[in-house]
Image (cartoon, rainbow, N blue to C red; front, side, top):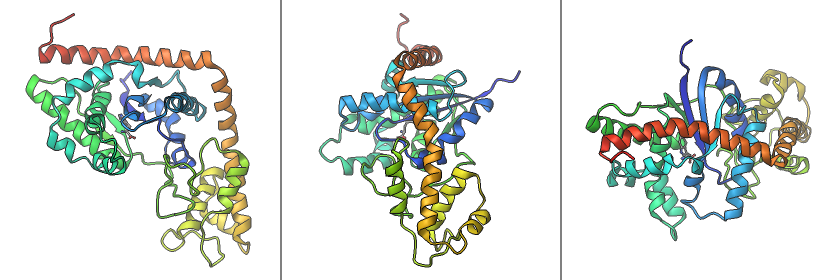
Length: 332
Ligand code: TRP
């Protein structure tokens, strides 16, 4: 049997997952395990580059793990773990800091954005974040790193760091490719259909989180921005709000755009928005129930974390030992 290609992605537990992340990405992840050997981790080391409340960080890390499993990521078929449970990330992160240049790190868009937003806490971790991310990736010698547009620059830098290291010491790291998933809907904010539905902003009227109760979901959809020609028609150029709602409805029900246009022909937006809200409530209901069931089963979640960290640690340590040897550290 052919070896499966390896894929790895990290998720920063710094905000609640939304309908946008589910329909746009997570929903398609369970099927990937057939084709790829997949690693997913909760990037808690990365989360603390911005100040977090300890209790919130701990709760969110576990909650997100439970949500991923509830969304279909099977811990038997994927390696799921918490970044801080595998010390090799921090260890290789340090080493790679010594192969990431000040100039490169200074040019990272995310660093510039985040230091503008957190002017009172521009810490060293925020600056060296991409070296840690390079370590996260290179430890597992993956072929692909699925990332959004905003993280592509970090994957590019990871490749540069890996090439630099390989050039000095001989082949050590596989050079990973960014992976831009083909499927997945692009869900926009309900309040501002020009912008993506974002995960980190609280109390955002444009957002539905995976755990929102039905009445909140219905309220968000009733308030959704549309337009004034009272016609449910797919036209992403001129009717952004309505088209976004149609995309959500299509993704939740499996209906096509022409079917949806026929279904709401001659009806007011109110009825359409209610139908979209109800479809989303039904879509999220089983995920919410499963997440709650998992969160109540602490022993199970602990076993997932433990097995995941063991499996990941085994692979990661192999790479780390090779690196330590290459740079000249005395063997233990
Ligand atoms: N930086 C990513 C983000 O902000 C999270 C992340 C950390 C990551 N390490 C990674 C993503 C490794 C992919 C691979 O979303």
